[in-house]
Length: 407
Image 1: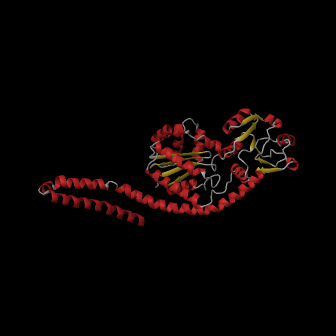
Image 2: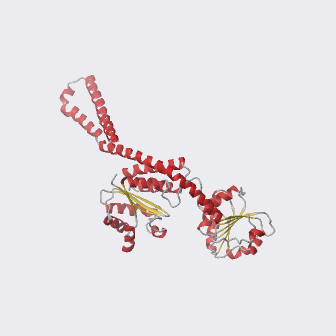
Image 3: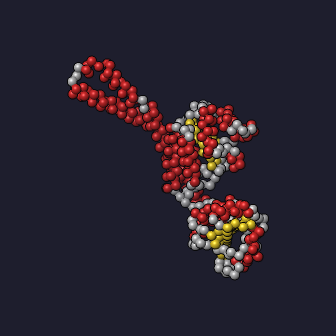
């Protein structure tokens, strides 16, 4: 177990842009990581890369000290200068042996994430393992660790409510809208084509909404989002002239002022006096506060969503203790499984050795005696030997496991 090591980079020790320099494109991973594993003479290797985390899980008999770690990153990233290599050498989190197993269980169970309860991480961990296994990088040690990691994470998400309440603003915005039972053919106007609105739009499209109009300062970005939604794209300058009406307005821009003024809103609604839903995820708000006094508006603001998010995070935090109990149980079970696996590996040559001994006895040592026997007697002797061979294999293996489990 002492051969298992992890070098991790997360939001705790590097910013996202720095972590990004460690990413390796999937189509290059097999070639790059295979050559790297060979160059450093690592026994096993797994590479985990997400938007805010990069981790290297590996096994080796070498001493993992500062010199080793410096050589690790200098070999894997030869295009980076010495200053950057030094940064990675000194700013990683190191785990080994059972501490490494505990870390992986915590990662996959999301209590090590930037957002506790982030269910996506279990999928990312599983896929990273499957990719590295397919590349021929992993072996028995990482396989056993990942089996317990995935099983434990599944149990965490099944037996606790760590991930039941959404905490991202986008997810909360969608769930709030869904609870209002808006018809799927509602007219949805989207102002801004940045990451937030793009993610929100994916939720809407996935759940059946189909009537979209996208406005953005850069028309090409509006067109890209509109293409994904099978909608219409218009430049932001045309918002004040838009006559198509809306039922839901989703806005998130980087404007310093209230982008949607009373004049623009009046033009957007025209003579339609029905109550409108406005999801305003911008900071500061895109919707002018005067509008809520002039028109019936169901304003879902980022402040409102953040308040819910904070409450949900508090609820998730209460579940962390329960999750940690599950992880500790999994650690105990892993140690027992690890001992048993070591016995199996140590004794897997016993069956072959027994077959060789039996063959030597029959064909050489007692060859004359066997040839003097009739067919029935020879068959009886072979049956006795086969029975003894089977028992001789199973008994010591069972005894060895029992001894190890008591230790």
